Length: 108
Length: 297
Image 1 (cartoon, rainbow over the protein chains, first blue to last red):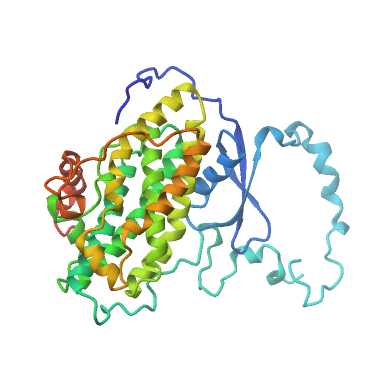
Image 2 (image 1 turned 45 degrees about the horizontal axis):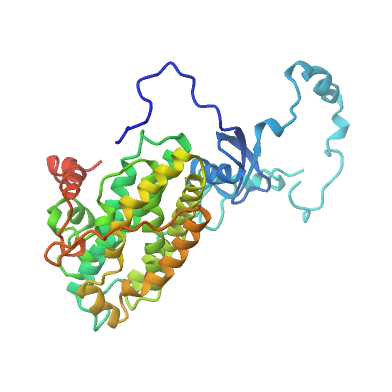
C-alpha cells in the first residue's frame, strides 16, 4: 500500500475528529418507524447517508435511512430523569387498557 | 389489547418469505431462480464460456484489488464501502465463472476457474489488475470501471443468454451504486484542496492509459454481439465519455493527455497478455486454495 506523503508511525495523535458525528436511523422492511441504529462520522449529510448505507444496511436491514447531525439533537439530561419521567409512573389510567379495541384496528 | 395487534409485532412477524428476523434483514433471493440454465440453441458454448470468463475475471480481479484496502482505507466508513463494493463484484464473478464452466461443458465450478488457472489464462482487462495507488487513484479507477461496466450490463440485460441477462440485471443496481460512490469522491477530491486535487490529477494520469482497452472488442465479443448474446464494447464509448465527462467537469478536472498502454504484439488482457502486477495478484489470490486444495470451511 503506498504511503508516500501519508503520516505514519505517530500513534499518539488523537483520531481525526474533523468530521462531525451523525446519528443514523433505519426503517426496516416491516418496521413502521425509523429506529436509531448507531452513529458515524461524515463530512456532510450526503456522505453520511452513503456511509450509513454501507455501515448499517449491509445485511439487508433497511428500506429507508435518516441521518441527523448529533449536535442538532436536543436530549433530555440523565440528571433530570426523575422529574421528567417519574410523575408518569403511577398513572396507569393513561394506558388504553380499559376498553376493547375493535379487531380491525391495526397497529395498537 | 391482544398481543398480535401490537405495532411491534410487525418487527418480528414472519412474512411471505418465511423469514422471521427483521433485525438481520430478510427477503434474500437467488437472482437465477427459475431460469433455464441450459445453453440456448445457436449459441457457441466455447465462445459463451470465454465471454463469461472475461466479464467474470474483470469482476474477480477488481474485487481483489478493492479487498486489499481492508485495514488501509483512510476512514472506517470508506473501508466498509470498498469492502461492500468488492463483495458485490465477487458475487458477479461467482455467477459468471460458474456460467463459464457450465457453458463449455467442462463442468468446472467457479472455484476451479478462480483458483486453478494460470495468470495468462485470466481474461480480464488490464485496468482491473494494476496495483492500487492512493485513495484518489482507487476512486478514479472505480469511476472508470463502474461507468463502463454499468453501460455494459445495462445492454446485457437483453442478452439472448437468459443467465447472462439475469446476472446483468442484478449487477446493474450494484454498479449504479458503485458509480455514485466513486463520482461523489472524485468531485469532492477534484474540487477540494490543493493536495486532494494534485492526487486526483495523478490518479487520472495513472488510470487513463488503461481506458482504451475497455472499448476494444475481442473476436469473441464481436461474434457473440452479432448473435445477440454479448454487448460490443466499442458501442459503449460515447455513453462512457458523457458520464465521465460530466463528473470530471463537476470536479473541475480534465481528461489527461496520455497515450494508451500499448498492446503486446496486438494482445491485451482479453487475450491473457497481462501486466507484471497480474502474476503477483494471482499468486496471492490463489495461495490458500493451492495450499489446501478442496478444503472447505
